[in-house]
Image 1 (cartoon, protein in one colour):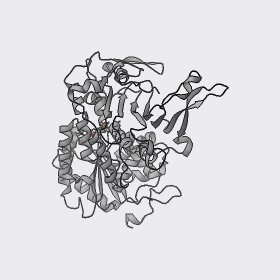
Image 2: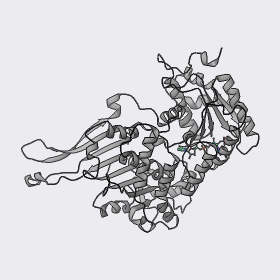
Image 3: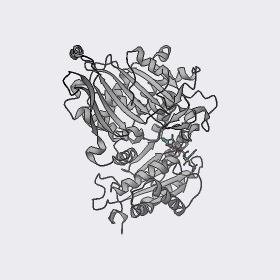
Image 4: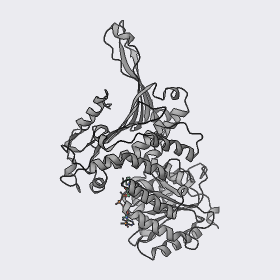
Length: 515
Ligand SMILES: NC(=O)c1ccc[n+]([C@@H]2O[C@H](COP(=O)([O-])OP(=O)(O)OC[C@H]3O[C@@H](n4cnc5c(N)ncnc54)[C@H](OP(=O)(O)O)[C@@H]3O)[C@@H](O)[C@H]2O)c1
């Protein structure tokens, strides 16, 4: 019996399998023994299987540098999935595991070209995956070039990339460590893949509430008329974490908050908030509009970096009543490290819609609360009518889009305090995703993996967008790399970040939102 004629083993209970119509796919995962693969990528595949979203012909070929049999790897993966894919029934996990394979292919071993190609062709034959490949590079970036070189050579092997079959690649972040390396990586990618075959991941874009920014703006008539410099005073985008570096000190020392969060996730959020309505919902129309935003952002001059950007590093302190060490005491961190764990930046968008509206972005580790939100702060009312009646607390209206946790949207507005006086106080109108829909949104990785299998790159970063985002942060990267930060560590764990970040907003007459 042909594998395609069997009942879809990944059909959801009582549902129709593969409603999105994903083509038969062989996913080839490099870095399959790593943390991200085990905690996020493979559990997301298990969730897709449970929800009946995989095609009946789906196989996962995990690639490593040390030898392991399929059975040994499956046994290890089974216990990993029990831990990280809770809620997925054992029958679904077993059905998935029957389609999981392991192959040893060090990218620099000349035999790997033949070994990988033969294994893929064999799986096509046994599992009916029809030559469609989705490679996923979940390795340290230093391995990207050798793996791309390998994939370029594999592509020319007999049966490895049949006519009309797809040959796609997903790349984990970080996409380069500066503009030059990002350009180089784009060039190497384009030696092997065409742009429409490349999926640069930014898992923030896979979050339901991030996608909802577009729905909020373009599926409602009340917001968009206000969405411009006439009504909006300024915008604050915050990604605050309570966690420190959690054993990833080595990675973080090479990265820092600006590279790790601002260059990618936060700038992409800014693009969604600030973009013009796309002509259509197709991937390129949306990505073109996102790119236009980046190209309208006023470049920060090197001499102005101190005015428009602030860096910080956490010292010891306490969070939730628990003492935590400072960044420099974390494992694999240099005792005199200059790496920033906090970054705040002001960007201005020089276009018709946003002239004069500053966008303040901040991110930090070891802040008092885990919150990601976009706050649209509206202009003050032109005349304070109620001041004459006594004390009023008339704050500006704020529309806050909460990305995590407690995903939702809240609008702050003034209301009358009950009683005989005309007293005004701000209150909040609150929409919470969980309460309204009663279902948990899918994991970002599930959405992104499914989109990549469907060939939809909307929520991925196009090459030119990655480069433009780097271009914007490069002056800050350069100035920070070539100057010694003052007073590091300059904020206590559990505080809201360095005083200089508060001062940056105070100079403009604002203050950061407290969550
Ligand atoms: N972990 C996270 O939370 C997280 C979050 C966002 C993004 N990322 C990104 O995801 C990627 C993987 O991160 P990770 O935390 O999973 O790393 P990890 O735990 O260190 O795992 C790295 C994996 O890459 C493989 N590898 C290492 N060097 C290689 C080389 N030269 N050639 C081929 N394979 C090699 C290792 O396989 P072997 O078994 O062969 O050694 C291992 O499976 C990185 O780019 C990281 O920046 C991770």
